[in-house]
Picture (cartoon, rainbow over the protein chains, first blue to last red):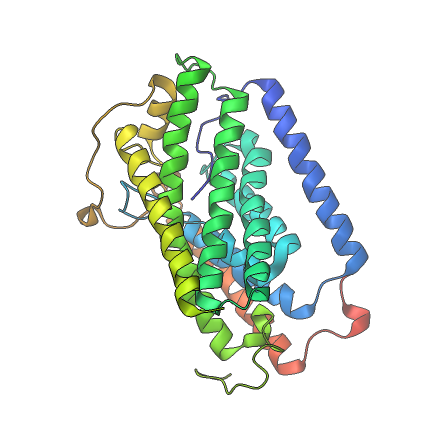
Length: 226
Length: 106
């Protein structure tokens, strides 16, 4: 899903500084809010699992749409929340960049992209549940919307920054980036479906993990219990 | 909310995004979110045509920098470590009811 794979030196220096500063500001605000508000213990466990799943699937290239990788940031946002979800996005990007997947200089930009996916997915999921949607369509839609937000932000970052060495004028670059964003929207459907199935399963066995304990308190679990 | 509205909305969302995805795939000559061709599209612009939409014969591969750099063991170790840590925390919280209040991270 949305992830800027351009190499080191692809963005001009001012753009690197700009996205790094904005990314640092976002992470700083999130850390401040976490320190002030604390974290529920079950979220820590979910964050660990989410980071592991996201990092692992980040590195797997799947032969659909010519070759894609998923992020699971929508799932991470729904399970761990927008604050921890954003921190997970940072951690996964650092690990990936250390392995050569994504430029180190683009950590700020890529963290912004992936954090936006987690944040939008979380709030979309909550909103749809408040509208009395079922878990599967709510989580699948929320993840898809979150991932699309990340894709659009990724495109905007590339267009605003420009690409060093590109022969394209800004208008043509925008069209090329629009094509890549479109591709990501298609992939978002696949990842959204996967997220929907996972969240639906979790909701059936541990509704408290997805914030549905109150909603389903009068229902018997339909799956395996732990 | 009625089921048909929920699933109708989901289907419409998926249909629109799949159409956008297919357009992106063809307009960029089969460029990918993660591939050399996506960089090429940004350097040289979009083009018509494209590769095959699905190529299962290629299989699922680990990211090139990891695979070619001989870091498969490290990748597996990191993924396994994070998974074990996550599941360990999950079991700990589930079994013992979580951390005590004075242990809760501030």
